[in-house]
Amino acid sequence: MSLLGAMSTAISGLSAQSASFGNISDNIANSQTVGFKRIGTNFEDILTSSTAGSNQSGSVLAKPDYQNTLQGTIAQNSNPLSMAIAGQGFFPISLLNGGQVGTVNFSPQQYYTRAGDFTMDKSGFLVNGAGGYLNGWPINPQSGQINRTTLAPIQVTQSVYNPVATSIVDMAANLPATPATGVPINAQVSVYDTLGTSHIITLGMTQTAPNVWTVAVNSPDDATGVARGTATVNFGPTASGNPVADGTVGSITSPTGSVSGSAFAANNPASLSFATDFGNGPQTIALNFGTYGKAAGLTQYAGTTFQLQGINQNGVPQGSFSSASVTSAGDIQVNYNNGQVRTIARVPITIFSAADELQRQNGSAFTATVNSGQPLNEDAGINGAGLIKTSATETSNVDIATEFSNLIVAQQAYSANAKIVTSADQLLQTTLNMKQ
Image (cartoon, rainbow, N blue to C red; front, side):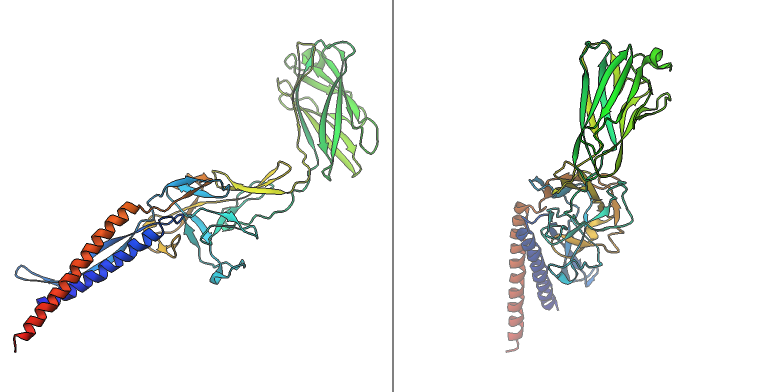
């Protein structure tokens, strides 16, 4: 019985070391695979019978030791869509149903990966090198609201950015308290109509009395061809009759033409609006001079020259798709050649209570199991989720030196078990020959 038990135990040892060889081979072969997680080998003794007086040889069983939580090295690259997770968590991905290349028929099964080498395919989906389609929470481009109840493959629609007509112009400048006599002060701003065509608005500013300025609005290329109108801007308490600080806008009065001014209210916006027509119908534009009584926007302080600090407007021309990129928050952004950016989705980080218990589907994709716990989708850096590193990927967590050391040990153990098998066979032959 002992000889047969020894042979049986040695054969189980051969099988266990063979499994270890397979894991080592898999690790070494994938040492350069993005996001690959190595598999170690645990050996478990299977006991048959053991007492104080006797012990029967048992066997050994090799079990995989998944190391899904061991971080690989993060390597920077030039791909604006690639990502790496610094810390715990996985990217949620989808796979094509049945591996049907060129289709968008996704499997209902949810997968998870650390392979963040995402690029955009011909259909606009973000796909990693292993064929995993990146999932994310949709974002409403207009409101910026994130829909965290939906997780779906992210698709970049390479559409145009529709033009936006100018509705607000913000102006920051200082009018001189003692301007040079007879020198007009003009400021120009480029605005856009509903078709995205640029037009020039000219603001002509003239001091008519101390702390009192007449602002004339002119749009020389609009359909009417006439000035839009004027308004009087009064600075300080004396000129305006309102309790404001010297040099700040105190009131906007005496509007003419299509110009109208906002009524005074402490700490409320100081603005004048005018209507114009660039050939596509009436368009109203508000000129924002800051806040009543605040030294911001348009002011009048000492000096003889006009100082323009900034003038901006909210209109944009039509734009074409330029590129797509990802931020450290996981926001997928679409960039257009008119300088505009549209955020379409946010990539969550999926965490598990026992990530090493995930079911391996291939070298880089996993699925949840009962032992892994339920997946929790979190924003990057929140509630234990790792941080997102952009233009980077996580390399394999395989250490070649360690694998070669394990290979030598496994090879010696395999040879030793083989030697036991041959020795046990020789002893059995000797036993059988005793009858002759």
